[in-house]
Length: 232
Picture 1 (cartoon, one colour):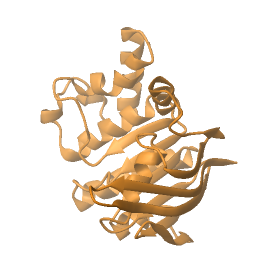
Picture 2 (tube, helix red, strand yellow):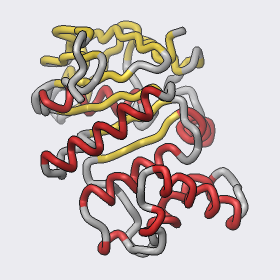
Picture 3 (cartoon, one colour):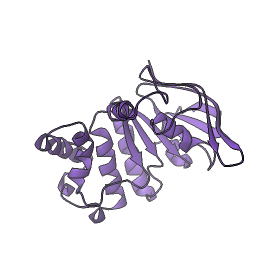
Picture 4 (spheres, helix red, strand yellow):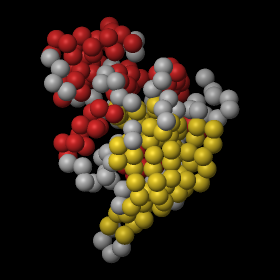
C-alpha cells in the first residue's frame, strides 16, 4: 500500500516581481516500511518537498495523499495539526530541543499535546530514552548532552506518538562521521521494525544507507533508484 502519494505537485513562491517555480510536477509514491533518501543541492526543492510532506506547507497544484487521506489547504489548522501529530514524526538538523526541559520532558512533549497524563507520558518517554540508549541521561538538560545524544533524544521524541512516517531533515548535518554512523544505524533498526522513514540529505554516504534514493534537481525528480547493497 502506498503510504504517501504525490501526483503532479507544483509549488510557487512569490518573490516580489515574479513567481519562483520551486517544485515542477513531482510524482512520488512511497510504500509502508520504505527508507528513502531525498537528495539534491541547495535550491533543488528538497526542503519545500519535505514541508509539503510534513503538512507544514501545501502544494499549489497537484494532489498529496497521506495514508489515503487527501492533504490540501482546505484542511483547518486544527485538523492539519491532528494529522501531523497522528501520522508524522519530525527530526531536524538543529535537534529543536527545548532548552529549559530535560531529556525526558522533551521526549514526552508530543504526548502532552495528545492529552496524556503526566505520569503516563513520563513513563513512556523513559521507555523511549532507554531504547535510544539514553535512560541514564533522562534528567540531563540539552546543554549537558553531546550532539549525538541530542539527536537521539530528538529521534525518541519523534517516535513517542507511534507515527506512521518519520521525516528527517538533514538529521546528521551537525554530527561528526562516527556519530552520523550511529544515528543512521539506529534509523535502519527503526526501519527494520516497519517504520517508514524519509531522510533529506546532501550527503551521499548518508543516502547510501537508505533503501532508495530520490534525486531532485531544479524542482523535478531527476532519478529514483533502489539501492541493492545498503551500507551499514
